[in-house]
Structures are given as C-alpha cells and as structure tokens.
Image 1 (cartoon, rainbow, N blue to C red):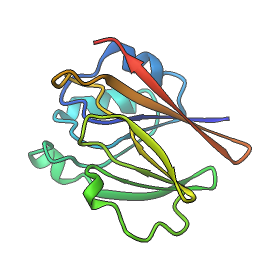
Image 2 (tube, one colour):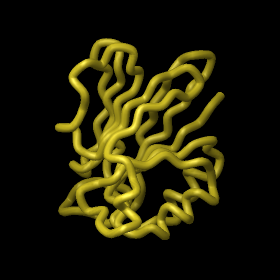
Image 3 (spheres, rainbow, N blue to C red):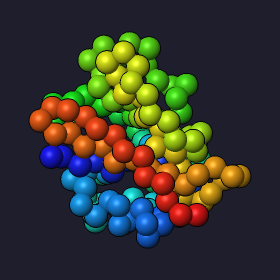
Image 4 (cartoon, helix red, strand yellow):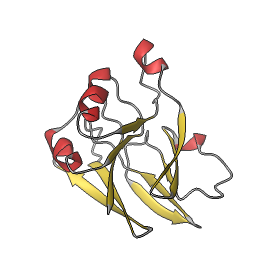
Length: 151
C-alpha cells in the first residue's frame, strides 16, 4: 500500500497533528498557500514532497514553485493546482485532480477522476473545519480519507 498525505493552505502554520498524520506517508502533496519556505523544509524531512504555488506564496523562494504539476504515482496520474478555476478542461487519463484555496474539504468522483480539495490545515479561517486528506493506492485502487483536525 502506498500512502500519500495531501495538505493545503498551511499559511505558515504546520500543526503537530498534521505532522503526526504525515509520519508514515511515502509522499506529501501541498496544494499551495504555504507562506513560509520553512514549512517545505520541515515537510521534506518527513517524505518526498510535491508542491504548487498558491496566491499567497510571495517572494523569491515562491517564484521557483510551479503553478501546476502533473505526475504519476503507482501508475495513477495526478494533476495539482492551487485554485480549482485553473483545472485543465481535458481530464482524459487523469485519476486525481487536487486543488486548495477555498479552505473547504471536498472529494468527488467526477466520471473517472477524483476531484479533491483537502481543505486547510493551517490557520483556521472563519468557522471552517481544519482538514487534510490521506490517499492510499492499494493494488491499483484509490481510497481517499478525510482527516478532521482539532482547532
């Protein structure tokens, strides 16, 4: 089983509860609004990291981050951006599309593609839940679990 931790919108805060959820992941995905490069340094110590730049990621360190990523893990094709409005129209061959930005968790199977927003696991915004996701790939099957964190 291959385990991926998916987070977004940390906004400079990396909670201990998030760190403990990521400990046994083989890969971490961050869908933007990191705000501090130290967050990436810390995450890279846990597992390999793939990240996209969010609208609040400013400065020289953030300019080096891609705005979108396509990659394959365990034979599954992923596409990741920060804002859902930047999703590509043609989802052919894409198994999982990931975004952040709204701070609201959502996970839907649209046709053959999972569309996932892990929500925000950084600073709590308004009365929204603090969430992240764990995606597992086991014998070619994808399972996505919402993780609700204390706030």
